[in-house]
View 1 (cartoon, helix red, strand yellow):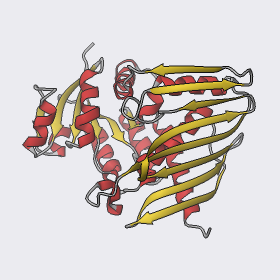
View 2 (cartoon, one colour):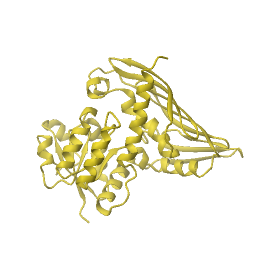
View 3 (tube, helix red, strand yellow):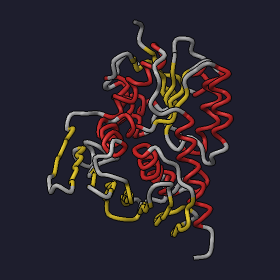
View 4 (cartoon, one colour):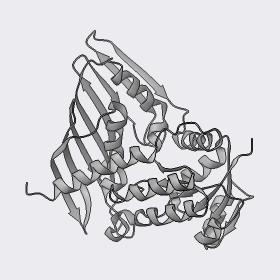
Length: 324
């Protein structure tokens, strides 16, 4: 079968270090083109994809008839605009998270997807990793009994004023950058949606959130999370049930922060550990996307799922604006 030919809109550092190599390595995919006017940045991609076609503008790449799908790693505030343009140009779209800045913006993306017949999805890689699929099966299968509480943490340190994550006009902030993982992970594993967000404490710097403490109520359990881009790097998520505890110690940056590891402790005093040292979740994401394009298979992270995470994000921002 002919591979899905990919173009990348912009020579982002993350695209060069992670997604570009993942597309190049994925079965059923071909890293075909890049849009950038910076020849030095293009050279960084051509180091591992020497036949890469380079366009000097995003529009030129979208007009290339040889490209089937585009990956969009642009700043957050440009995601909706270029996703819509790509679908209008007849391309499948995989766009970095957060794909939108408000949940209702997903409605026009879903409508464009349905009208164009193209696959469009948020690049939410963690749901493609076997540790999350395993966690979902164990939690929903009753291994830890009835779920009582979920606790998530994701922090790192970035105070670079020039970085887009610290620029409010570009949709910066810790919640949009990494809070999506702490929220979406709980939704994916449990299959539940938050009812309310009664508490959210946000600390802002230059109009972007640099620290957030969140409390939410789901139908079957309580939830808490800490998200920050002004703290020492730490990540983890724990699902605490009546009869056991399931913990992912490297849930979000597998093989970068640490090795993906899942532990289950039950009321029988046994501890089971599973590890996935050789899994690249970015490659799996691309392969699942290509399978959906080529074979019509269900994609693990449809726009409807991503809309739900953004809705929870909107709830957190709304709660954070209320008096403590």
